Each structure stands twice: as C-alpha cells, then as structure tokens.
Image (cartoon, rainbow, N blue to C red; front, side, top):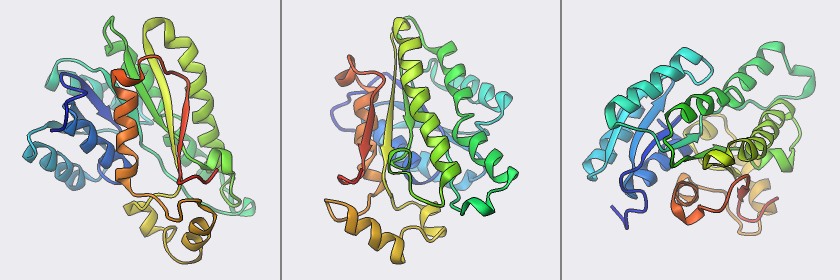
Amino acid sequence: MKNGKLNGKVAVVTGASKGIGAGIAKELAAEGAAVIVNYASAKSDADKVVDEITKGGGKAVAVQGNVAKKTDVERLFATGKKAFGKIDILVNNAGVYDFVPLEQVTEEHVHKLFEVNVFGLLATQEAIKHFDSDGGSIINIGSLASSLTPPTAVVYNATKGGVDAITRTLAKELGPRKIRVNSINPGMVVTEGAVAGGYTEGEMRKSFEAQTPLGRIGQPHDIGPAAVFFASDDSSWITGETLLIAGGLR
C-alpha cells in the first residue's frame, strides 16, 4: 500500500478483468480502497486481478455482471455492498470498440456499442442509491476518440461523445448531493483487446506515435493514478471535467 489516499473507501470498477479497468482496480486498491472487480465473462482474468490485489495486502472481490442489464447492475452493487458494507466510488470503465467504415455499420454494431458504452449509465443510476450523505465520486472512462474523431469509428466516437455529455450533465445534476462526476479520456493504450484487434501494432501504432508529442502510446498504468486523483479528496472541488491522457495528442 502507498500513502493510503483511499483508506476506508469502497470502489466498484466495471470491466475490470483486463486492460485499463484492471490497472485502475489495482491502483485504487494500492491506495487503500476495497475494490469490486466487475467482469462480463472473463472470470479467470478477474480472479487474477483479485488475487494480485489480495496478495499485496488489499481487499477485492470479483462480481460478474453485464452493465447493459439493469438486473445485473443491481446484483453487482448489492453483492459489493454485502462484501464491504458500502459504496463510495464508481469507475464506469466497461466498454467495447469496433472500427468499420460507414458502409459497413449495421444495426447490430450500433446497438452493441451503445448498449455497453452508454448504457453504463445504469451503473451510475444504481451507484447513487448506495452513496451516503457524504456523497461519492463517479469516474467515467471516455476516449480521445470523442475529440480526435478518427475515421472508420463513427459509432464508437458517438458513444464516447455521449460519455462526455453525460459527465457534464450529471456533474450539474448530482453536485448538490455532493456527488462528483469526472471523465478520463485515454488515447491509444496497449490492452489485451487492442492487441487482439491489431490496433496497437503496425501502421496504426506508428501513425499514433508519430502524431503524439511524447512519442509513445499508453500503458494501463498511465491511467490508474488519474483515477485515484478523481476518487480522492485531492479533487474535492473538481467535477464535470474531462482529462485527456494521450501523451499530448488531441
């Protein structure tokens, strides 16, 4: 454990079995938070994240749930609260992406991306039922894509633009209840999904690195410290903000 900025806090991190979500879960735990590691289907990966956290002296439990299904979301929070007694922090990290030209966009493609990337709003709706009178912190994981708007990503860009709008809207709506809502918008990050899709190698990677002032693409550990900042009292007077973490690319 580091300096324990989150000692006594309990965090739900959606889509935390791999990649950015796993990195955030580990970072929150290292700062003292008990973490509910949510996963949709990758149970073994989620168990590995929990195992790593607990072996390091932290507290964590893995809970399955599809963030696009209200009953799953309700069960996720009920299980988390039963395990640790309360909920203080929500990281809406679960997300999917698939880049195709406009001509190849299908109804199924649109539904798939919006159901996960935007319907994560259901987790926020459930989280505020569990926050106490001291409020809480909601951290959305958006994307550089909402401002960079790369081609062949029109649906993905639209979902992440939606996350930006949700962040600003709910910051105003929930602020009077001491609930802060902020967004982290990463650039290209090396995750299992990105590697499998071929997005972090070859010409696409070279193109991103050439455009990025710091000359490299990101790693999951580049994102975790920002989540700790937004979850902690260090950001107690910050809400409705979007933080780009993309090596200077915008």
